[in-house]
Image (cartoon, rainbow, N blue to C red; front, side, top):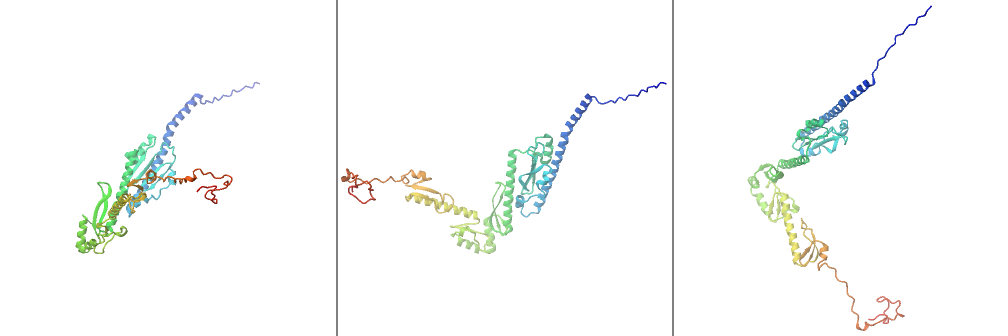
Length: 381
């Protein structure tokens, strides 16, 4: 009996060759190289857009508060957006830029100083309630459009542009403060002279006049309004005070005859502002100091001298005088005949009978001239 052997079929497993594996790996690497940077850029761009949305909300918050504020200038300088904080910004890889956290200037920058993609941006709010957006683009050109989307042509400011923005902001603040002060002066029903904004010279120097809070064209118009309402009582009072000096530069008035107008009197002059009174007072003090110094020179005063009376320069200046000349330092004064030190005293002359005098050594060993008891053997007189 024969036992036959059955032939089992052999299974042949087919796999990847090494070349095929290398091709697949290289393909995946190339695909990752193309998609990974784009994916990372998308993440960062999303962060920027979220940061922009936050900044827009801060600007909206500032504008809302500005519209209900009673003192816009004070508001701009001191108000801050309610939700502005570094904790929220840090989740977007941003932080507040230094102390720029007021509505007048809110600025953020990347949390990482070595960041090459995220860019710094900000907004400024003027005293007139206007918002100006600026930004500094990063070195990655893929983020340039995002920068322009925030700041437009103000994406990437030169130093000159930054300086001009700072100048305009300071100018707007000064203008708002000037106009606010003038408005308050009118609202208080004041009369007389004041200053408001001069658009031509861009400063707070334009003269304006009002009578009891109502603007008029000139100081003469103020006087006419006073005369019409109160007669000559105020004018007569002013003439009686004309040759006096307002104590400590404090204003004076006569109510109700002068309608609340404040006056300053000084040596025959009548002023309607403290600044004008101060200027005249300082001029007289300067003239007095110069005259005092001239009198000292002509009077032969020597040595250290201080310009008097008290007042603005040259009052209070310390100099040295000698023979009608003025010296600005002690060293220069010491070079003159007035300031040179006196010569040392000369020894008294020796009497003729003492020229050849010799003390007796054995008697005068412990003798001290002027202190020991006088001895003719030890000292000649």
